[in-house]
Image 1 (tube, helix red, strand yellow):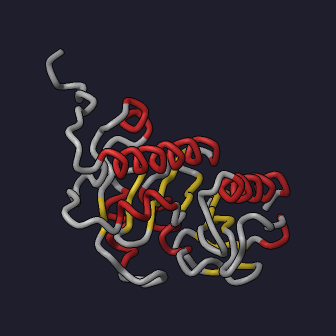
Image 2: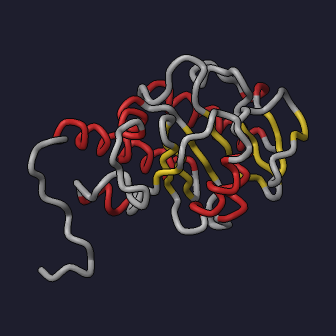
Length: 202
């Protein structure tokens, strides 16, 4: 793997940490490189990674080199197998998105309604996947199925998974998801209007 790709993963990981989208030793970042992925290692703080800390896996999630990968590496591999146009995957336990993922009564087909124009543009529909313990491989097929149609997912009682063609695009989408999750919590119980879909009449 080239040094440039490694530095991209590190820069994205540190950006997630600096923007308060991760805490402690949570969250993981991956970047496709041909048939392999660079991914953050298990038990790492995203704020203090170096290029040498990264793991390498294949698209089946098998560990190839470096320290042990995140125990959720199989989620990243599942997303990228389904979305050949995507190259970067971000998974966090960001506060507001994680809080929304704990709420009862969410629509499993679209956990956050279209409250803002930019959420509609950058996320679209956000499926909610049922709870599995972190690292449970049984979640892999569910993620793969959802990722076939969606580039952003919400794991119940856990947090978001977002992919994009590059790390910056994925990060923009993740920030939009977190921002809209905060708006949803602030307006919960209040009457709201939604962004019209493109098929709605003016």
